[in-house]
Each structure stands twice: as C-alpha cells, then as structure tokens.
Length: 250
Image 1 (cartoon, rainbow, N blue to C red):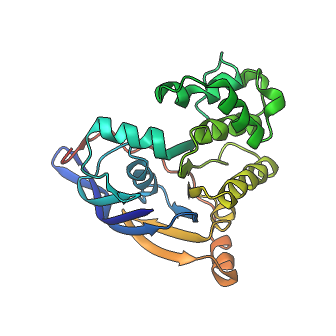
Image 2 (cartoon, rainbow, N blue to C red):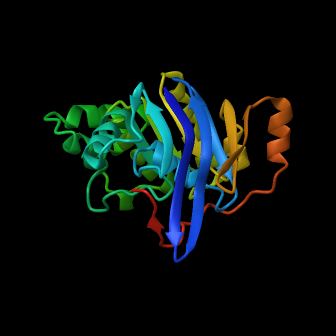
C-alpha cells in the first residue's frame, strides 16, 4: 500500500538548512492501523503531509498503491488525494454556516460527483450521526463535530485515512468514542495512520512509529511490553507548525 524510501523534506531559513524529515524508510500495508508519534519538531506532521500528498519531498521516493507519487505534479497529487486519501484534523475544519450533511458532501463536489446527498447521509450514518444531518457545527458538540469530520473524510470511500491529533480537542470519554469509530473503519478494511502525541491513543494501533529529529527512531508492533513502555512516557504537547521557511527542491 505505502512504501517510502529515504524520504526527506528540507527547508532553508537564511543560510541554515532545516531537516524536517531526514531519510525516512517506512512500509504500511493495506488494512493496517499505525500510529506516528514523537515530540514537537520530531517530523511526524511533516511525514503526514507527505503521506497525504499535501506536499512534495525534497528527496526520496514515495510509492502509494503502486504509483510513484513523490514525482507527481500538483494536479496529479490532487487527483490522488481526492480518490485515495481521507483526512481528519484536530480542529475539525468544518464550514460553520453549513449543515453537517453539506459539510460531508464537500469532497464529492471536488470530485465532480453528481449525486452527493445519498453518500453523505450514508457516511453520517456510519459515524452515528444520521439524526444530526441538518444541524450546523455550532449546534453540535465537539465529539459530534469530529464525527462529521470523519464522515467527510470517508465519504469518497478512500483506501487510506490520515488523522492528525484527532482526539486532541476532546475529553477522554469522547476521545474513546472517536477511537472506536477508527477501529470500526479499520475492521472494514480502511488503512489508518494516526499522528498523535497521546500515548493512550498511540497504543491502540497495531504498530507505533516513533520519530525524533526528523528520523524514524523506532517502528514496533504493539504488544503488552511495548504498551506499558509507551504509557509510562509523559504526554507531550502537540507539534506546532514549523516557522516560515522556504522549501528546498520543490
């Protein structure tokens, strides 16, 4: 499904080269659920942006579903994003004055789908919000807004779901409910990649990839020993956006 080799993303700040991602190798197999974790500045969000075809690498190769996407044009990357990848973010990113069902339908408009209502309602039903389809985000709780965001991410039936700190703005009970939805989607065959600083979330995946200083520090299956080790680590703040800098090689 996903294969990356020596993937790098560098930025130039004045005369300094910032290696946000520095020669990472990673394989993700179809149907897996993995977590990517690390401290602020570790490179985990940069890696997610590259995996999501939101940016191009400075160097290295990225194969997605048999296609070499690391050398694609912006238009080609947009086609891949719209057809194969769904995104869930910490801040929901919903259109405030638009109903839940119309928020979910947004990716269908970009894909130029003529029928949008039926698949949007079906996606809301999958996340348990069929009864709130015509409510606006301001009329929904934080957990419900995140469910709408997940429904929007899956309405195109993507093969991969990328979630960046999906429980970061939620209380622990609501966060567990959101994770239950991810597990159900994973059981249905969706490949899920979670970027999180919360170890209680990370250990719910089948594998955990730990990042540090732009490099892959560890890639390990979650067993009872590793679970205990991760849960003993003090939670860290979510990764902040990198300072404005000029990408190299793009």
